[in-house]
Length: 236
Image (cartoon, rainbow, N blue to C red; front, side, top):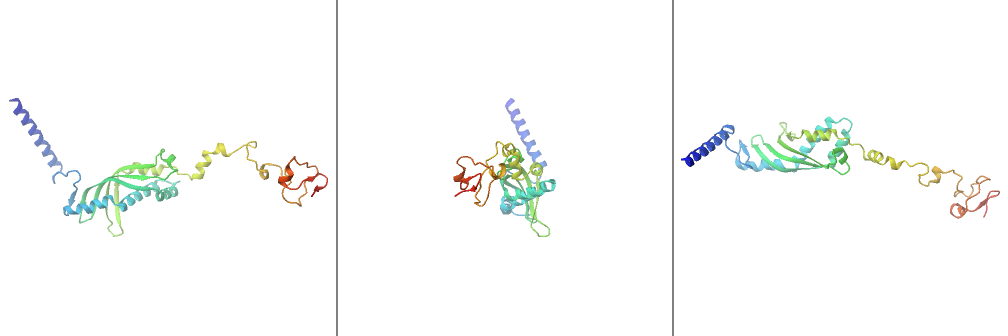
């Protein structure tokens, strides 16, 4: 008698689960990969799936995210605009959840990945990729001006973009190399015209007369002009 009782309990539990699913989702169970089609035919799912994963949709999502970040950023708005142009985005595993053929509205899920250019890692915690798992809706604008997109799940990535300190590369390099780019007088490169007395070398102007008390160092003549004597200037 124990075995039939166990079977009855198992069957009762299964019936309860099915009843709960039907109550929560009265239109029926939507299996993974099988979207809900509203006011349309099952074949319309292909159009919705194409809309979810098209490159035009990816670029539009990236634009929406960067525009929101630019609104949040005051100091680096121009740098964010340049970063948007230099970044590449893609959607991983786009899935159509629901498609309304009459409105041509697709509700999708997917993971946006934004590949950042080299050189900005320090502004993004040493990362070159931003990721966000999204639910997004794409549909034509009411005025026919194009597509309209709504995003859910992009807040963290947008905040990271908006808070990034995107200083010009030359400023970052100067700060990073400050201790090496500021030599002392003793460490300076040998630049006679900048750090030496102008009379250290005779120069290349043959009409130039050095001070009478100037005595050239041995070997200076062949490299810097004809030899001369302190009393009579240049000699030939």
